Length: 171
Ligand code: NI
Image (cartoon, rainbow, N blue to C red):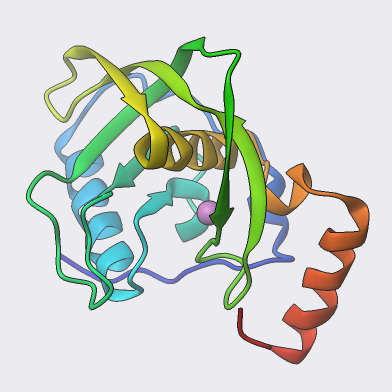
């Protein structure tokens, strides 16, 4: 496995829409493993392919990762994820992003979702998620459409974060 280069705001690649993966090859599986290693190294709970400069619909998630970056028991590898159901009820979480380093903000998301995706064997799976995991999935699937969490907050808060990013402040 290898640690990959992370792309951060305002890199243009983070604003692009990703393409579907047509075949789950060994190269794709290796890329997912490298994404997971990169995510753990930077103590993230999720990482989408555009964040490592690849415009494909790939995500890795570990909602059980500890603050020390110790991996949880069941990392998720999501290929071509698609949210097929969303609850009307919403929740607000304080979100951060490895591509928006050192910053965070409250973002409103659907409280429960149903996700369709392919696993590492290319087999279609259905996952129902709520709470923290549902938030991570929505944050990461947004990345595949070129959307960052700072695109989902008020312009005022967004501008504050961008200003702080330039000074590299902490949350
Ligand atoms: Ni992110």
